[in-house]
Amino acid sequence: MDLKAENISFSYNKKRQILKDVSLSLNSNQIVGLIGDSGSGKSTLCKIISGYISNYSGKVTLDDKEIPDKDYYPVQLIFQHPEKTMNPKWKMDKVLNEAWAPTQELKDTFGLKDSWLTRWPNELSGGELQRFSILRALNPKTKFIIADEISTMLDAVTQVQIWDALIKHCRTNNIGILAVSHDPELLEVICDDILYFKDINHI
Ligand SMILES: Nc1ncnc2c1ncn2[C@@H]1O[C@H](COP(=O)(O)OP(=O)(O)O)[C@@H](O)[C@H]1O
Ligand SMILES: [Mg+2]
Image (cartoon, rainbow, N blue to C red; front, side):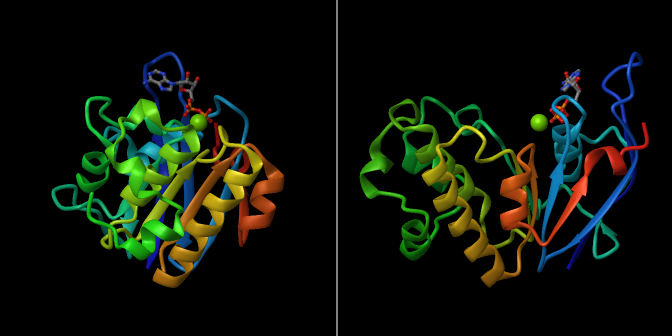
């Protein structure tokens, strides 16, 4: 499958245009990195590609077809701060099962412990929470993952564990990844190809 963003332009307000004629494409057998300065609009682009922002110009397609937003959205965004995406009044088993019910094998791949399921989000570390948010995004209907600085807040060991598990799952299941980071060393290790945001944003 091919995910394409074509000629995306966007501004939050009249004062400043954030994106101008941004195009990129990736195949589901690829891991593509996107690197760029803080505040340049990478997360905004991620939100557009994942269906969180709709008032942009240009188009986002999957195998050259527009993505219907009524059904499950096959392009899933994983955020930098997992705690912001979870209901603090839900225990973790509800947080996880709201999305889907992953197999025990997949929970094990991500090192998710059963004892975490009965805790509240504020009783887990950032790395533990991020394992939940990644698993939530891996519903079998997911075709692409947009990983927006997903390991920036984590220590080096956790970062490696999480990326190993995510890459293994995505390679096996033919899920493409757009990995956004400001860390070139990380992207060089995990990506097939790296895009520079300043080269694709014609602002
Ligand atoms: N909801 C919003 N309303 C107005 N401006 C925003 C909003 N979200 C982000 N911005 C601004 O848009 C610019 C790009 O932000 P962002 O896409 O988060 O950049 P990056 O991810 O590259 O750091 C920043 O100047 C940011 O302050
Ligand atoms: Mg960002």
